[in-house]
Image (cartoon, rainbow, N blue to C red; front, side, top):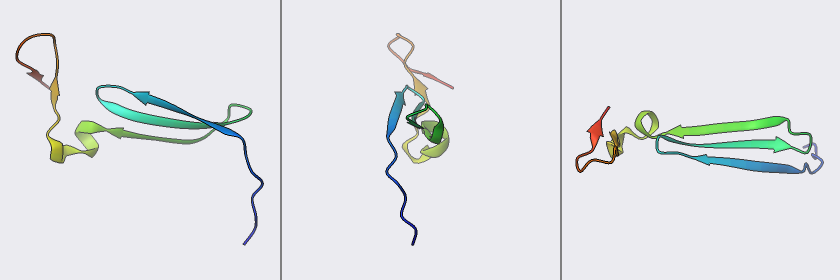
Length: 61
């Protein structure tokens, strides 16, 4: 199996109310990995379709 030289990289995370996203870039800022989890689409078993609008009752999409 061929050995790979170590590569300096950085991960960027984006946490929002509708998804979590991660992006990996190398030292030259080239994106070499990107992945996301959309809560409604990828985790429907949790029934997470509510959005807080500042009212007492959540609204549904």
